Amino acid sequence: MSEDTRVAAGGFGLRWTVLCGLGLAGGLAVGLGLAAPVEAVVGMMLVTPVTLALAGSMFGGAQWLALGRSPRFGASWVGTSGLGLGVGMTVGIVLVETLGQALTGEPVRLAALGMLGRLGGLAFVGAFAGLGLGAAQWLALRAAAPVARRWVVWCVAGFGAGLPAGSLAAELVGGLQSPVGFAAFLGVAGLTLGVFTARGGAAIAAGLAPRRAD
Image (cartoon, rainbow, N blue to C red; front, side, top):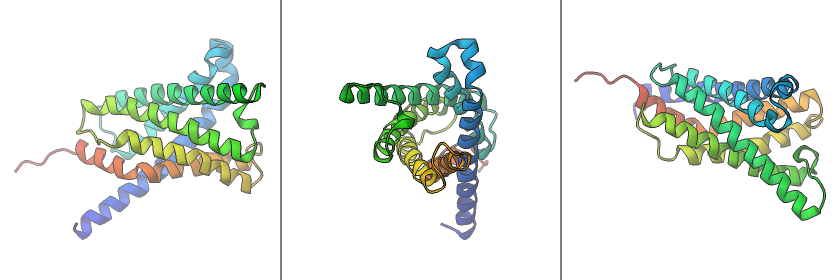
């Protein structure tokens, strides 16, 4: 690999990681902030998937910027990102809380679990979020660029590691209930996800790059 290629790869990795961090943090903050008005429109049953879909769309938009804003698949990437994260994370949360209630005989809320239980639950939810997001984005990629075969795996690993890492960071600065702790959770989760998926993002960006004539 030439020096110029290494520099370009390093620049993309940094841009991708930072934008993933900003996109996930901003998306979840906006989505959760709009939960009350969204609930008033769609009802309690749909508020979680709708707000998470909003978050996923913002996250996908940030990734799209990192990929070079290719008009060939921008709309489908952002749209499928919203759908994938909304469905995947909602399913993960429902499964964790349903399984917890089955084991304890009492209603369980992920945010109210002890530290170890919350870390395990967030890893599980993150894996489902990554599965939903990665699979949906894979569909958008098929028609626009050579598909990174391991893209879904990278997304599962990134979300599965990112959410628990964010929770651990939050514990160090006051917990998820504090504004600083919640900000730390969002930022660390997004940056961790960016690090895990940077290699796959670089492969996608290379596939979208215009081909030079020989």
